[in-house]
Length: 146
Image 1 (cartoon, rainbow, N blue to C red):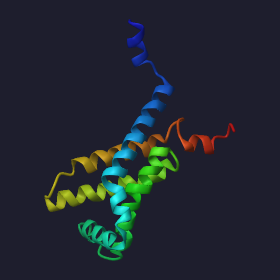
Image 2: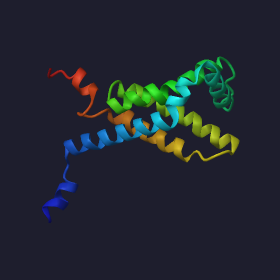
Image 3: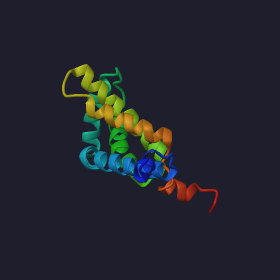
Image 4: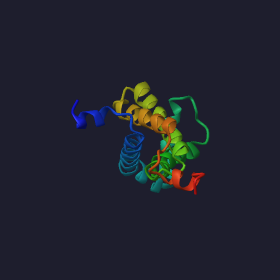
């Protein structure tokens, strides 16, 4: 077998860590720039609209500003956490929940496609389960080998 082909199929923990790094940075950047930052900086009026619209499809009608802020937080601060690999599992968990709520909204209203929200939800779930990997601030700050 060609040595380059064997490298592709070799069990390689470093390859896993590079894969997680690419996934974390990609998801974090795309969510932050395309979805999160505008929502976070939109302030309470924007948060109320987000919370009201997103949560009504789950039958939740109380404290819409809080729910909207949490969506904005997970899509901005959570995305930064994922990208840096700092509190990665928490950021990924928050983002996964937000994306599942978004997918539900698309499904129940019939407006738009839930596809991107589900892709982000699955990617966030994978990051949450796998962790940040070795190339992360989590690893640097929480390593027992310091």
